[in-house]
Length: 216
Image (cartoon, rainbow, N blue to C red; front, side, top):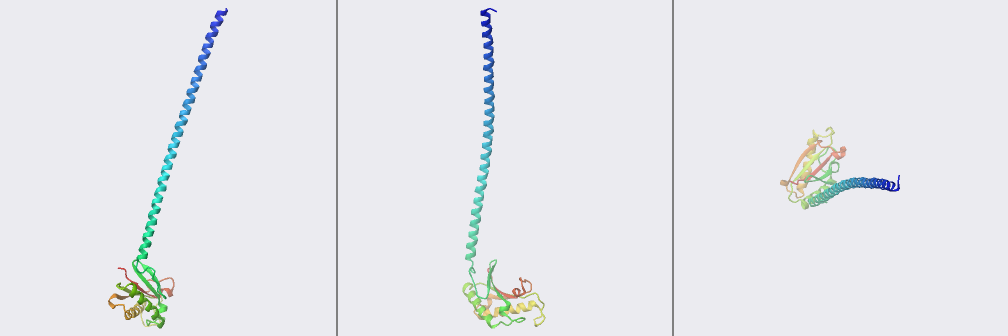
């Protein structure tokens, strides 16, 4: 092969190799670009998903904070209502004072007021009832009063009352009459007999008289 032909072949082969090389580089760049684009798209999707999760968490946290504020406000309102009740903070020596709905209940142990099977007030009981009458007159001057008598569940055996209901009424009535004698108007007060119908934890606790200041 003469020199001119060898030169021509060399030029053609070189051109072909350059074209192949250039095409390969372009194909590689195109593949890298597509891979990077796909990765970028995936990252954008993940970021959007995380942002959505964060948004939901922020919304949930905001709702919990609102719920917490509402509960705190409700508790504060309940506290103010309890403190505004006429019987709030009332204490009377020898009694237990509690609330029953809108009523104020002054509970006096039956064994403090009466001997077993008796409906006659003990001398010491009068001092306790004096304090009850004074508290009612000063704190609840216009309220109606119900005196409730209760007994334990033991059948009547040694007294002449016949039934626990009768004994509970006589005891409640004895307390009512004493409170009337201490200045509570007769039109404001009445007695109710419950006998053993509402027992407490022990027999001693069940035997009681409750002076109830009616809220309605």
